[in-house]
Length: 347
Image (cartoon, rainbow, N blue to C red):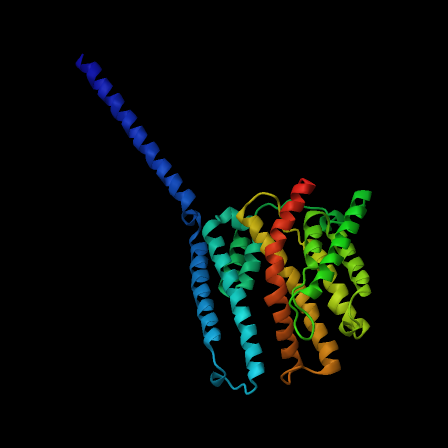
């Protein structure tokens, strides 16, 4: 009897120990799930801390430029100071926003997710002006090289394929939608020398992401040609102004969608990150082209409306037009529009 009691006690103790061990393991798993930072190598933890510090510094810079007065600078013209201040605030605002995104990304993502989304982390680090993070990422990518599957170079990688009747109809539909959006721009807030809220890029971004970059490029080119029917003659002063202000920018959404940042109907953090990257780089391309046009076409023809430096004028003027007016509206609207299109297209 005593032996049986001892055995029963031992069995009970063993079961209790197992339960304790299991509960401890579950706690650790729960903690790791909630706090993925514990799974990261020490180098990535340093990168996250650097991101946090840089983001705080960007916030301080944003506040300083917001309260800055003309007496603190060597600028004499109040209009020049106001435009420079606006552009600086806008620049620091974007860097601060992307700084928040990269900091959150460091916290949420483990090493595997970082390695599987290299381009996203590199781009966010560049856009948030985090030079140290770029170096850390490059080192991490180099030290975690795996066996890469060889992909044969094919036109399909760039979304180039044989067009079907469905594609042609879709291209025509989005071309018409782009023209309608372009027509409505004249009723929206505009800057005195052209530029303002531009919604015409929204259908082209959607078409490039959901269907095919080639279709988006074709629709953009067709829309740019047909927009000649209702564009004011004062907005086109030469073939170069039409090419740089309308034709090439209308094809940029399709070109950017060739980068293949995967966007699906699933509500994941990386998916929403890709929305931001696609939108940002689309308007970055548009901004670069229109800034070149501003200097070599408009400033060359009429001179800057304020200040003496044509490049500064073009950079700031187009920056306000693209980043303060067009980009925020399109970035917000492209998410539901792409989601609805993906749902209809069953992707």
